[in-house]
Image 1: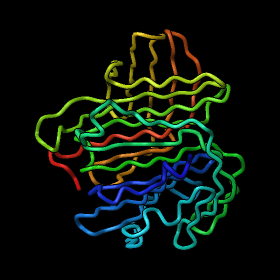
Image 2: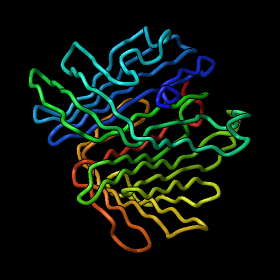
Image 3: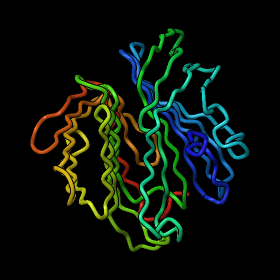
Image 4: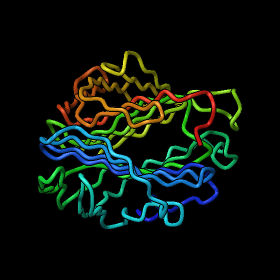
Length: 281
């Protein structure tokens, strides 16, 4: 159920809801951020369009009471400011819910996550007075919550490739154990190619990353199935605050078993987070 993805977790000190969508010359990422210890709610809007690249922050106290008020099961809308939108949402059945029992039940790590990696958007996005129609555009919706952001991470999400109906979502990170200085590496790599999907979770799979934010490669090796590699190149990074840089217009190659499966040109979301050694919430 898509409602489960959006359901708030009121006991979590930090909680994020977000969606991302690319369509032709426009790309939009919106985060609803709830920091309960500080009693603050913020909406963060990151956009690429023919009229420019922009990241906007706006106080939004209603997030503390209602989660993400403008992000519902069937639509999302924001009616004011330089960036506005009205979009319907149609999520595919797949969900990404990486869990390592009993780590989540014991709240061992910094964050928990659930996402809908393939969502179809229709409607419009407006930026600086220019309105862009969004027609059957693929994107994703995600939600994470916990003590605070991980120590550092790499994130990839892409839905527009040169072949087939392919979606990719991947995170590789370092997380604290029970909020202490002790930390461990974790990660997951999900991708769907038509009717076939794989979700590799580390551990037990092994996920590694090499390179810089401008050009990096994530490799996933598991005991079952061929090796998967994501080769990313970035452009137009912008700061999202909290030591996070993000672009929605990167390039991505998907490799499986040593063969190139598909390419995304200018439509991959790439993010590098390099937080502190202390929980950010």
